[in-house]
Length: 190
Image (cartoon, rainbow, N blue to C red):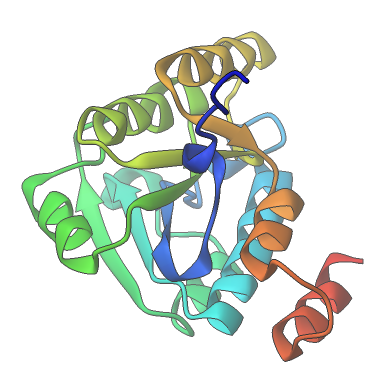
């Protein structure tokens, strides 16, 4: 009998996950194709994070020029364990964030935000190099142009990231029906 493949890198567990929100900001989101839809999906993930006690890291690229994090993400982040960082580099993994990730003990990093082909891609690559299991919620990231978005998803998949969706992630975190968390979150999903 042939050995079974190890699919453990594709498993998501709420107690080993961290949401990493990249640059969902006031002047950036309106310029992105499906930017508002990405915000709505990120907001749903944050509601799940609040229910399941999943920590969050959030970045803002040059907020003086691109504005603050958009609502409802900004308000929802206030309801969960969120660490916020300003940045200028496209790769969001600064020394400070690297330390925060290490101290969190979480190995499964879920990425949302923009732009898919710039900051998201460079951050995913950095996280993979550091040995994290990286999941990209394809419906919670965006770019200005469809072609850039499509190529970025392919690149991230080729590098080893798991490309998934918001709903898939939430059900993966929940694992089963009938729990109080399921009963609360299923109302938000449906």
